[in-house]
Image 1 (cartoon, rainbow, N blue to C red):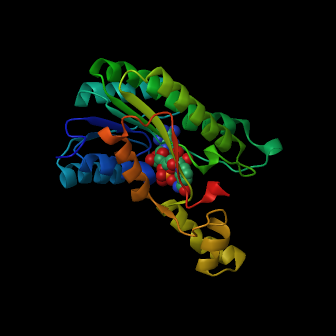
Image 2: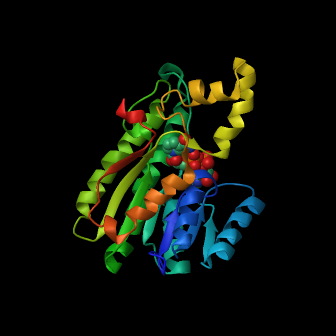
Image 3: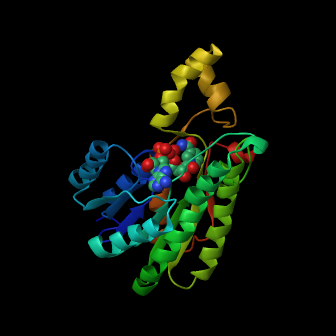
Length: 262
Ligand code: NAD
């Protein structure tokens, strides 16, 4: 039987990409799921109902905005009231903006810090009391290779992703005797529809072949010259939910094809 049978997982930003892969991996292990994120209602409903029919679990969707602390509290409350608990919390919602520091829009800085960093604080704060009461919990945050190294023009993203590692270590220490672990997963470049869609335009703009765009532009920093898959990231998250991972806490796991080994 699945290792998460009877448990409930809340995954922020799970209407696409990495978050959706986490949700499907946890559902495959028996968890009921709270999906969160934006998207056309019909697309979100398609993913939600597919989780229920593919894995025989319950799945609900919350449109809570991860920039709004009260909506984050409501998201956790939804898991507790509608599905009975929040046993696994994955802080995954994230946005990006690329601009040099002196022109970096202040509203973009504020939004990235709110969605990529503060949302994890608010969600963890709301979810921990229930986890403590039940004596078990798993908190995982999608950080990034940018939690370990920087790239120019991504000041807010890099600051938020470095910050999340500090939050993770602190929470891990506070919860070390409560059978609740708290870890980060730090992917390099992950193959998502978002990335795939950039390729034709970049080929045109730079007059490059597809393989040149992939190797020399997108995967410039990634030594394997291969994308990480969403399933590879989700498999690690599922392992972190297992009993075998009970002593892994306060860690930050790179899944980046060697990027941060350089
Ligand atoms: P994505 O754009 O496919 O998914 C992002 C998700 O977050 C979507 O479900 C979106 O609706 C949701 N979201 C965005 N703003 C939100 C808000 N205000 N409130 C609630 N939900 C919101 O991106 P992804 O590539 O799957 O990224 C997921 C996480 O992985 C992010 O934290 C990102 O920083 C991180 N990451 C991605 C990569 C990559 O190469 N794709 C690499 C390293 C880290």
